[in-house]
Length: 199
Image (cartoon, rainbow, N blue to C red):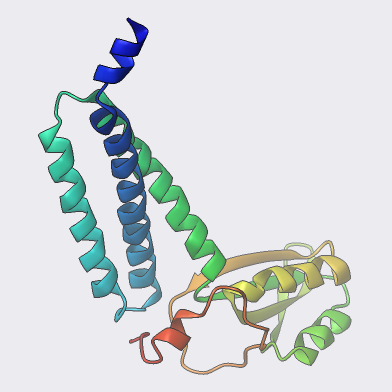
């Protein structure tokens, strides 16, 4: 009897199709997440391409779900693919590390070594004398590529561990000095689309 049950089991509807739906939804949501990130970063030429494939995959998946409305496994796969796709899209964006960020450093300590190290690695540094709640302080501003922010923070912790610092996103800049770092395993979008970032 057990063999009969397995022989009559609809493997496609209850196993193969949910897996296809899960993987497809994972892909289209990942593309959608990246599309929103690229829009916010100003990389607009790649956005329509991502949008085309995102919607194409979504339509195919929805069509399959609508044909199997009584199959609860398809609903689980659809929702699971959405959740996984959101996570994967954010992870990919994190690895790409697109965009610029400003690092603000406020310290009462001597920061000459920190400034010297930043400038040696070609980071643009602006220094301002300021007055804090407990006396005179130095404010150091540097705009860096997002993939280099961890390096700057490490230098702050090594040289001025008690310094206050903040990191904020920047959409665009006019001019600046940026440290050159070796490319990661993920190709820069600007290399693929040289004029992809528009103002």
